[in-house]
Every structure is written in C-alpha cells, then in structure tokens.
Length: 400
Image (tube, rainbow, N blue to C red; front, side, top):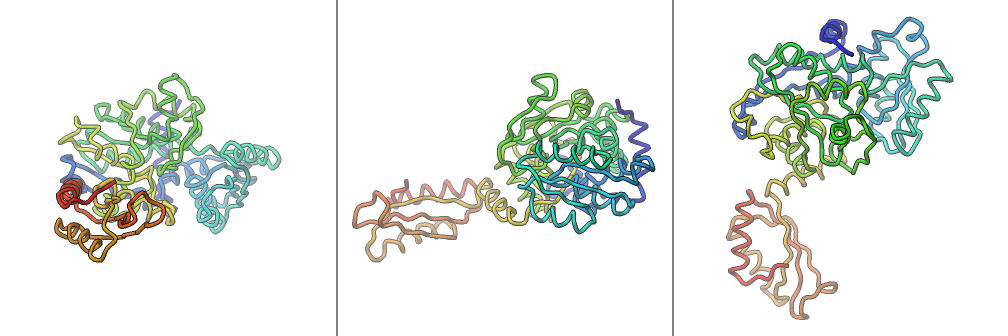
C-alpha cells in the first residue's frame, strides 16, 4: 500500500523537473454553475498532461543498473510522452510500444523526445505483450502507466498542490480511467483533509471503474469509441483500485455529448484546449448530476490537453449541437421560384442564421413539384430552436 509520506516525498523528488501548475478561480465557470470553481491547469505541463509527475518519480527511483539498461512501457499517449521527455532529461533510455491505432502526432513526438518507439499490435493488450517481451530480452524495467506504486505516488502530488492552492476546499472531481490519478489524489487529499469529497468521473463508454466497483475487483471491459480516449483502459489497475475504492466518495458517468459540450465551454470560457478525459469533470457539473455541490468550493484538474487537432473541429460542432447552437432540420418546400426564399424568410424572422442548405430532388419522397431540403442553422440555445420550430409550423413548412 501507498502512504501519504511517499506522496510527499515524491513531491520533493520531482519538484525540480515538474511545472508547478496554477490553480486559479474560474470566474465564468463559477458564475454559470453557481459553485466556486478552481481549475488546476496541469495540461500546461511540457508534454501536455499530469502523466509527467508519475513518470519522473518512477524514473528517479530506478537503481543505477535499471537506469543503465533503461525502461519500457506500452502506451498510446500521455504516459509514453511523459516517460520519453523525462527519460531524456534524466539520461534514461526509454522504449515505448504503441499500438498501430496510436495517433501519428504522439508517435512522432515520442521519437522527437528521444524515445525508441515500437509500433506493434492491434490493441493495448498486444502492445503490452510486446513490451513485456522487450523487457525480458533487453533487461528493461517495465513501468506501468497507472498501476505502478511510484507512478501513483507521483500523480498524488497534484492533490498536495491543490490543497496548498485552494484554501477551504470542499470537493475535488477527478477523471477515472485506470485509476492511478484518482488513487494518488484521493489518498493525498483524504489523508490531510478527510472532509473533502473526492468524486470520480468517467465516460459512459469507458466502464472499467464502474465494472470494478460492481464486481469488487478489476475486471476486463469492452470500451466503446469515446472523446475521453485517455480513460479507455481494458481494466482499472489492481493497485490503484485498492486505494480508489476507499477514497472515492461518489462516482459519476457522463455522455459523449456532455463531454463535447464541456470541451466547448472550457475553450470558450477558459480559453484552454483540453482533451476529453480532462473535460469529463466539468461535464458532470454541466449535466447537473451533482446538485449538492451548489455553492461549494470545488477543484477541477485539467489533467491533459493532447486532443487530436483533426478531432477538435468535430468535437466543437458536436458541442454546439448539444448546446442548442446548431440545429438541423429537413423540410419539404415548393420547387417553384420563391420556394426557397420563403423558407429562408421564416428562418430569418426568428433571428436564426443559415449555415448550410442541401437540396434533394431525386432520392426523396417529395412530390415532383416539391423539393426536400436539409438545413443547418445557427441558433442561440434550445429555446431559440423551439421558436424556430413553431415559426416553421405556423408558416405551413412541412418538416420531417
């Protein structure tokens, strides 16, 4: 088991190589949620995530022989980046095995940071098997991304910093994937301020922690595609779960649309780009699943900012849909001159703005004298959409 003293020692150990990220009060988020929100900006670490904390701590605790031979890990993302960066700083050879579906940007970044990258396997399990083989063949030390005690201790240093930065903290929301972050933060917080509520959050599509709680032990799960890819692990860590089940007061799941909306809110209000896992905690608050926190002083760790740029635009648009600011409808209108003008006049009369219109005269059920149109319009909110619907209905526009 891990102790508070080991987390405190890790904080001293990694201090010279880890950015002491700020934890300011968010005025806009506090205003819209009715809470006192403090955002721990750990996505500002050099490689964009909290994973550097555990990586540096684990590397510093290697023996001289282990440092000489080097380390290996299976990872598709932030753990690989953290090991690569701090391995370079500490002159420890790092090998990372990444599955074939790993984002190209993360592969090239790990290589640029000096790591040896092996791309192999169609899944994390296959990548892990290859990493174990390399460890045995080359006398490398395997460092688990979320279930190594030294990794968990390193992640717990964020909890110590938050307690230093936020006086009278009442609750902290922590994303849960493999469980290393919530175990470390939860142990640190509960050891020093047991009254602080520790609330774990995961995506509905990443059920590893929920399944472990139901079974009383880690179990293998099937993850669906999710914006919170950093939470998508096949099973919560066994060591992490031993701690997490004792320190987590409550567990919440959020939907993909809720995560997309949270990413959008952070982008607009906090001027920060975070990945889905980091936004999941705000998603829980925006979905109003924690009404008992109203008026409380709450911390949100922005634990990572490595969202794929190719995905970001789609995430923003999905967030706009969830927020009622993009609306699509299909209508049947006259195909005679003035038919489209009449439709756009109705839209304009409500203050909505047309973003896109597509006509379909061939593959639709409309009469020959009519045309089916698909419209995407920009609106203010859900109430504005309702107003537009009523206006279309009053004008006799048939919507499908």
